[in-house]
Length: 466
Image 1 (cartoon, rainbow, N blue to C red):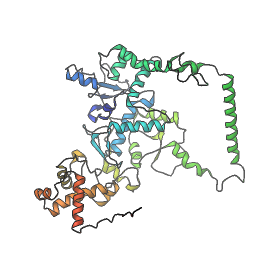
Image 2 (cartoon, helix red, strand yellow):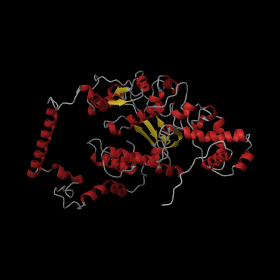
Image 3 (tube, one colour):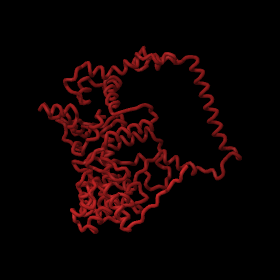
């Protein structure tokens, strides 16, 4: 796990990640694989760069497969990049593409050259912690501090790090005062142990006696606690038996009771759902470095249900998922993926047969000349901005499938007004519509159409006196 700051994660680009780096000096063929992250934009590295104090490897992080699968950057980053190339970008990453791009409000189109905002990352963190049932307000700083504390104090014997390793891995300045880092690592525990706000609690956690209330965890079970535990277990057993026996009573059993009634939740609990194209893609690739981690995760957390029948061809048992290795064969193109889906509108992704790229309407920077960019996007494609098809060549179903009908209609109105009504005369167009901003221009054109009788006016609702 890399203890990055929020902005450092957001600004990570494909050129900063080497999925097939050169072996380390003195490496042997049996050494485990690794990927390399280049965090040139780290705060303290930028300060060094400004003072010409750079190192050759002072900002490069070698990430190897980890035993703790949940915090394995090597595994999860490659899974995300493969998934993003297949189902979000629908193409290979370009060097300047952001690893975590901006996803538009419709949840379908993306802006690969614009990074996800720190605010969006914070919303996802809050959603993840809420879904995990972990109360509290967490930020990226919490994970930085938690990771440092884990490696310094709570990791298993032989896996704890020195203070120098903590400082380097977290990107703290080499001249950081030792007492600052010690306070960063230990003050939180000291705050817990000196906190007596819970003194009236019926169960004494003994926080003042040990780090993180370990004394309370090691204390023997009291008589009252034992009685309460046995009472709770007794009530739980009675409830479970009552529910189980109710299924065997002739009158209590539901009509048409069958095992198939429970197959849906069973399958949903044990399967991961991927598009059908992903299934065909993974069957042709092997991933020795990643497969053991996926299989370990499946056997550790999910029951084995490989022989449970399922009707959805897009469902895959987790044990059979194979994530392509970084140096594997070339990736499937968007056109190949689209050709494998017979009903694009019903699939989990938007796949339009016959197209090499997903149709996208790129964002336009605000300003007095923004309308000119609308005309350019109407006339020509701009692959640099993921705009692969001129809007004038769009089909109606493209806008519907990508949920961009309203956006497409607005740009079409502006473009046709300039081309058909004003004959591409910029002076006449700006004289008729001197206002700035796409939204204001669109409203002015719509009002002009209403005045000319080209479209009907919407009748407003009149409220009577109360």
